[in-house]
Image 1 (tube, rainbow, N blue to C red):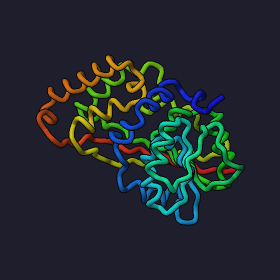
Image 2: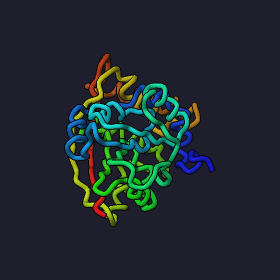
Image 3: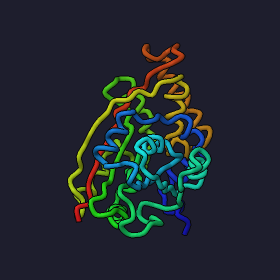
Length: 259
């Protein structure tokens, strides 16, 4: 069975169809995450780190800023191909969180950037534990829309109407796999970030890059885009602006392999 067949249908279809939009319209990560990777995850020029569920490579610049050696693992071919095109020096492997093509205790760290909710299972954590060296660390990072802002909350509710059974960070079900024997308690950090640019990119394009939205029939995607544009036109902070700042909370968690 191909690894892509082991992926949730929303991810397999949506990310295959929407890889270019994902790379173009998703926000980057705040500069402060680089210091967190160095201090909390322990990345440096002498470490090897797996970017698990690497997608198109949105998190790779943050990893490279630590000087660590990066191995990317991504099961969706279209995403992996975009990553390889943008970051040719990076080793990009076909694999899943539950079946990584790596030997036991072979890496210093594994990070999952806006990805862990797709594979938050005991099977995946067992595999992550296998691949990490003793004392190795697992970092979980998400860019989360800051729904403490009214228009962002309304946007989140609009998007949620289409999610069906798609795993999402906002549902917090990923937390149910912790605590996990062999890992320490999760340590949490938070950073503020703003995705700046034209609203058609940072709001409309970002919504259309969502896996379960990208997997919808074309006519439904057009309707979603129209709904988002109507929200923009109804919001004084957004309407008529060439450049907007969409607020995000970057949530970061780390746990250490204890035995």
